[in-house]
Length: 254
Length: 298
Image (cartoon, rainbow over all chains, first blue to last red; front, side, top):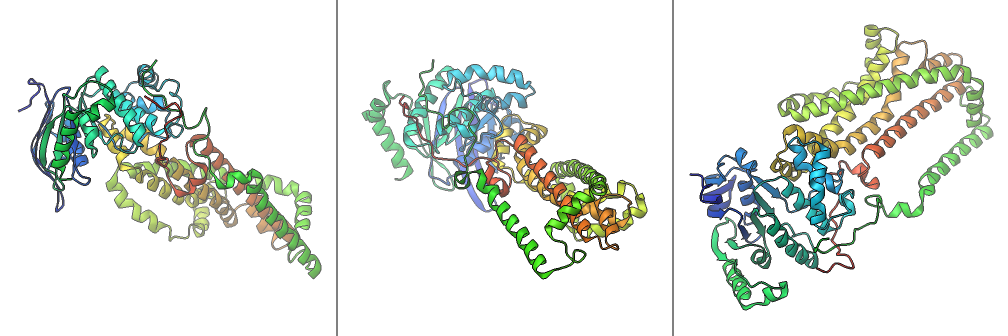
């Protein structure tokens, strides 16, 4: 059943989820190969976050099969995935460095060693000299970077990003998108990115899955991996990108 | 060293997290000056009315008579102050330790919480201070019945605030910790307990104001020392000024305890926004709109 050998990181077959009488997701089929990036776009309330929580192992699907690596049970899926929530959820009583290092501490690494192992990444992620800052002292973009770093430090192969830049203004969001693409090139991971922003999904992922309104179903899968190299402006205005965006928006019904 | 955009930090250096706006602007002087002024005016009025009405000291002493008595009776009051302060402090510490311990226990074991929590609320209908005579029968005239009474009086606000603080932690924070391999213990230690601290301290500040009442009732039920005993002994002799002096000292004990708890909170909960403390556990500072720095270009 498990698709580890074929390089499949996440496999969903006929996954559905109902909360009481409310059906959030229906018949979701999705296969994500290792170290690829898949964007999930859909209207709000369409069960995108629920889908991520099911993959993460925080929720159990009502119907269907969920397979992450070789894990099918929710408890075991938790050990394969790290979830970056919509809000940065940094702990105000911890410094930026200690927030980012918390996953290591959870695994029993001493605080001193967890810090030492996290510190080098602060520099790489443009957070140098802010190790000792409290979350309230950081800008929104920096908090989101610390939150991402915390997710990364969990050392999981699969990163589940739930609208990671949704709370940021458009300029900061654009910077963070560029930053994330570069970060993912240096540390390859399997990424499931939930967003309501079609452009963000197309820019950041190789494949974009469009979900319908509730109950969420896969309406369309768009291959987005081949837009031309170049600056952000060149990409988003290229004919190919515009046409992909049109396809996606059409599938969303807008 | 990094090609990523640098954003200016929101505040340079280790500035306090969220500067409270309105009252800070008026300065610390006003925060304490205004109530002090009202207190002074009230005492002055008290003095004036009693002097004009020529009320005898044994009926109702004036503030200046109380002050004079405090000075004259200091050899009696000072040892009594120490006895009562010790009862209050020890009882409070026992209560805080037991209260926080029970709160954590009830939080960890939800079945236990469902069984005990309603009883805990219900137990508050028992007027604890009237238990004092029974405790004296049980434990004698020593310090023990006073400690028990103080601890019982302080216990409830600490436990209830503790449990509420632990329970009101953002569920998303806990989900996030679970995906980061946190055990139940790690979640308690790294998320729930720190998040509940402001609430626990609120409970302790409420308890601090109750503690001296408990000690006095304990002393009234059977003792031969302490401020409560001094008051009791002064009553038949109509030493009214001495009773008031003892009351002033009891207030001083309560205020000192309250101040000590607030100071500990500042030390252990440095992240809590000062003005919002009363609103309960601050799991997360409010999200503010992000502002890219002046050099914020990619």
